[in-house]
Image 1 (cartoon, rainbow, N blue to C red):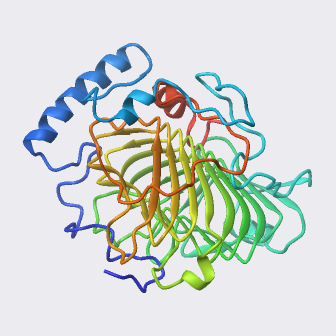
Image 2 (tube, rainbow, N blue to C red):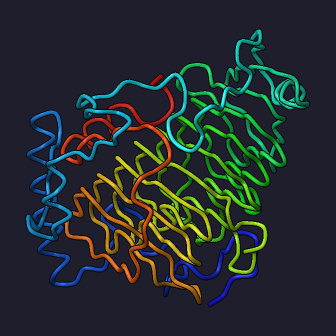
Length: 377
């Protein structure tokens, strides 16, 4: 069904009408195939946890050639070698958002109230705003250009609403807890904005309500461009990350919506991991648990899905659902963990236009679970 709504809330969920029966990370239909797969996965995870890490636990060792390739990391010509098993947090963004500096070296302002935060993030002058303490929020706070928003410690952030970047450029959002964004607010909305780095945040809700009770965790739309989403934890939600809000927005979105997702942890997120229309997405070294559908490429979007790990997931990648025009996807080096793929078109996006190195899938779970989310900087 073609979407005409700004957040696409009616078409990504198949037959799901609420949260009943899908409130855990193992929330897939229990067919005979899934029962065998989940039993194997559970045994593998238990063994891995006992050893303090996880390399390549798969219910089906020969799910596809993609799983076999996960033992050999892809290395771009620009980087020359694979990273260590546990890469450290970046000080600058890698990917399409490279070059984003936010407030740079501006003197930091620490805020301890919501009103002070709202005042501190307005305008386009360079600024670094440190958020100290959790704040309840209704709706969204607009963030001006040339801004770094940085949570203090492990518990600072916002609940009930979120942040909006609208017609902004050069913005960094790091180390925040953003939870339970009540519809129509997303935890983070990016509209008509460029040069954005969203890094080391925890974005979450719950699956105890209907799928439309909350809105998205991270929605990127209206021709936004040059964005990196790294080392975040997305948890307990139906609608993870929407890139491109409508099938009918080709004139604004085509040639834009270039987004890199790397080293993110999607735990018990039902779908949109991400859902991408029209744009170009690079999805590498991410860990996806408990999804119905993971990467969804549609309306001619081009995606490179590289060295990720999928667990308890029905469909890791699809290019052929819910829109009149399919997308494209190239898969390499992934550990599918028994998940299906629905790739109708592969396309030619195989070499992103920036330097990066994807660590092998065998080390992704250990890296991501140890370092993704707020409080890990």
